[in-house]
Image (cartoon, rainbow, N blue to C red; front, top):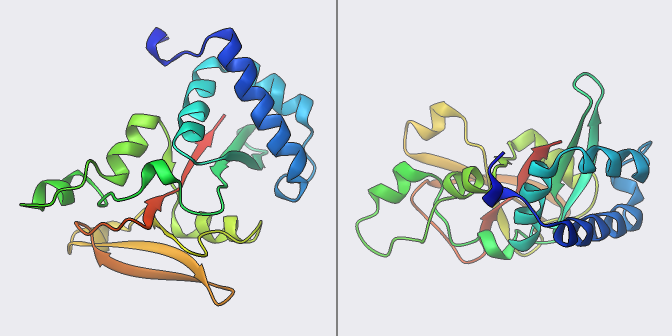
Length: 187
C-alpha cells in the first residue's frame, strides 16, 4: 500500500464521522443499508478512505448510494448539491487539454478523476443520482463520454433544469467555471 495515500488514524476517524453524519442525514439515498455495515467495510479498506477523503476535500460530499449484491461493493458517489467546487474549470480529458493552444485549464476531468482514484459517472449513473435528490441546479457535470462521440472531438455533460435532467454536448476542450465532474467509488 502506498503510504502517501493513507490517512492517519485521526484523519480516518474524522472522515468516518463526516460520512456517518451524511449517511444518517440522507437515509433516502441508501435504503436497506445500515451504518455499522458501511463503517465495517470502510475500516477494512484504508486505501479507499484516502480516496473518499480526496472526494471530500475537492467538494464532492461522497455518500453511499447503492450496494452491489453481486460484488458486495458499496457504491459511493459525489452528492454535493452542485458540481464539486474543487473539480471545476476542467476540459474533458488529456487529449482535449493538449489540443488547447492557449488559455489551458489546470487539468482535465478524466485526469483528475484518475489522480483521485474515482470513475466519472456515466449518463445512466448520473440520471440514477438525480432520482435521489436534485443536483446541479446551477452547475453542470462532465459525464463519461461514449467513444464514438469522443472520437469526433465531442464530450457530454449533464445538469438539472426545469425539474428535468438534460444531457448536452460540447467540444471536449471546452471548460467553464460552472462545469465540473462527479465521481464514483466502489468500496
